Amino acid sequence: MKLYYSPGACSLASHIILNETGLPFETVKVNLGDKTLPDGSDYLSVNPRGAVPALEISPGTVITQNVAILTWIGHQSDVPAFRPADGSLEQARLLEALGFCEDVHGAIGPFFSSSYSEDTKKIFQTNFMRRMTQLEALLGASENGWLLPQGFTQADALIAVILRWTIPLHLDISSYPKSSALRERVLSRPSAQKALKSEENA
Ligand SMILES: N[C@@H](CCC(=O)N[C@@H](CS)C(=O)NCC(=O)O)C(=O)O
Image 1: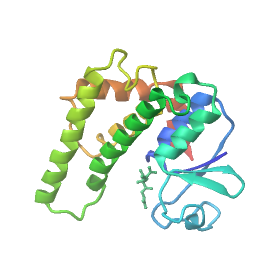
Image 2: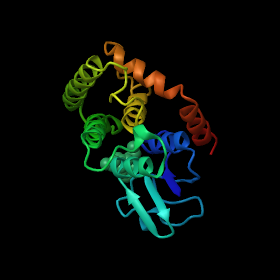
Image 3: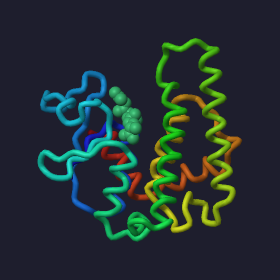
């Protein structure tokens, strides 16, 4: 398996989950600016939409989208929490949580652009904080501090990676203590520390 990533981007969630599973994989760093790979080749020939993550699961076969990749990795693993049975409620809940993470992803994405007016940014801020309130409520109802009852899953990895961006973006989430704590718990896991170190040193 080959994970196409950009340091600290949402692809970090797949990197963390791959480390958690112990499955063999290699990583390829993508230059998101000009869509090139380290050997100078065109990343668009891997993912025509130009986004990370992309996962080559066998030569020439690539899957994209966080939800699909994280689910697929889970099913290759022997981690029960990562691979709920097909058609089960547990599987629907995992997909539901991953879908919600992508809602949060969509709400924070605009902050990476500088081409919006301050007024427009205020609208983005309101939308993002609405998602934070929803996340905090989900965690408030959780008995284990994770998004799902089976424990740490792909959804926790993805939300932690997204919440990590609030630091460089100066988005204050201190009034969402359960969400902040979840971020720290995920990022302090050996799998996350290893992925972060590997991406920083690449
Ligand atoms: N819905 C996509 C979102 C992927 C995405 O937005 N990735 C960002 C990095 S976090 C990216 O590659 N942005 C650059 C681009 O789209 O050109 C997924 O789940 O994979």
